[in-house]
Image (cartoon, rainbow, N blue to C red; front, side, top):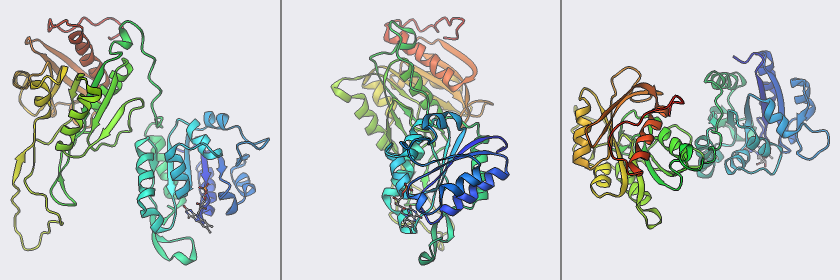
Length: 434
Ligand SMILES: Cc1cc2nc3c(=O)[nH]c(=O)nc-3n(C[C@H](O)[C@H](O)[C@H](O)COP(=O)(O)O)c2cc1C
């Protein structure tokens, strides 16, 4: 997997910097082409000459020094990057998008996959500021290989969490990242809206989308949830954004990066999601044009949340008492909080008539039915097979298609409803697939 791959290794100012040098040698042994970035603090621990000797290529250290590798050229050259060791300082600068040195500038210029491998004192690693920065980097699409437990490189530290992973482990994680398709860690900027329909058919519209599961806590450790990946809701948010809409995405806990150009509000429970939807739908004092409920919300939550961990102890069984959660999309539909309200009916056995029942009872304009047990449909897949039901009883069976394509079909229908064409008929689709 690493043979002939073009990898940038960035080494930060940590006692573990010598393992960054070992990583360069490990990647070289695996057949990768390696070029290095060394921070000024990293240069206090290992020399640029050593990295140049191990990688066989010039080392980038200073953005402005004559003869340094050009950061834009190096960003265009690389297929993937690994920052090892990543100091607390690097994590903070990268999370904030700072570009005040070579590495920070290069990270912004490089759109490909980046693996951060932190190494630091255990108290530094557990500091909330560092954990916030890690979460922000992951939300932006980077991978973070958390430090391991063991003897810390500084003799005074003893053992603890904070030890840089071994070069072989880092090389393995990098190979896995490249094997995952080396997807860019951030999507391209949306195309500018085209005037007069087409790609800009939702220009000026305010669209609220919910996505992912919700979690209902039982105690500080456990929760009730479902396997929703959030992909359908994220595809809808991105597709609406690309049509020029001003999009608010209310997301439960998912592993997807925040789509660029979309206002994301992350929530955990159904009650939090309800409040966020009501806030977003009324944002700016005007009702939303469109609300799409693609989240798989928990219909019930525990009546009581234990403040302490529920232990097995002497119990042979545990009976949970659940209370119903509010039905968010019904509240939006019946209250007409948006011009067009779209719901989803993820079923396991019930047919599209279930979606039609929801459509009537919840005041929806469209309801998208799918059977989560069908091949190529449901949770965690990139495709779906759906039936889009409307108020006039028409059903559009999409067949098995990519979730992004399903999103486009739903938005085609939404655009027609916004334009006042309520014929209920599925729109004719041209040869370009729209
Ligand atoms: C002896 C010594 C060891 C250090 N080790 C670490 C470390 O392991 N991890 C870390 O995050 N910072 C460590 N630091 C602090 C960083 O070197 C410092 O925050 C620096 O600004 C990091 O710069 P950089 O992120 O550009 O490499 C250490 C500092 C010294 C003096």
